[in-house]
Image (cartoon, rainbow, N blue to C red; front, top):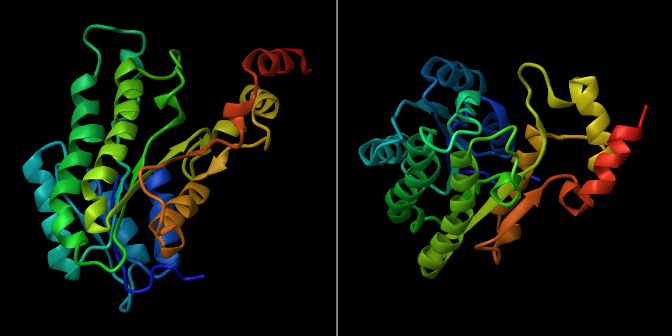
Length: 266
């Protein structure tokens, strides 16, 4: 069902990965979209590929690590489309392995600026335009590492910023609820991206996924996009302040038994 005909979405970090999956789903369901991404050429090429006369997709170059950049991004979207109905805060710094395990000298400033401050600034500057929408929604992309620690994979700023993003989601839901602006978050687990080697392509990873994920597979970026689409739709009109975990059931698996199963499987 086309849920988003004649609606306008702003998606940060939409040029690749989960963000691209979100963009594709919203586009298929009729939305016009602004992709805000620091990878300007990649975002422009993706936008040009999707855009058509009756449904525009544009790329917006803006530095959302600053408040002025966030304001410029929102203004560019409204100038380009005349309205704004959906804000998807997906952008996050890359996971720099050099910072894993460091307490001092870790990459907090990057995560604070992109994951937390940008979400607050974009939401604040988008709010006056969202209030004019018949069905406004904000969706933030968190992670299962907001509540579970993966010290071999992520720096502490990644964990803490995603945890803070979930609390910010609840705060914004309370702050913007009186204006009928719903604010929710999605916390993905393992996700196979469309580009490059997939997590589940590695035989060792495949063995672990089979043991710890009840659905025995990673999600696709498209599946995360479908959840975002639902949260932005009228079908979710009474959902706000919620964190929707999309992990294939991984979080309900008892960890010792799951690890033992992975070790014992030939």
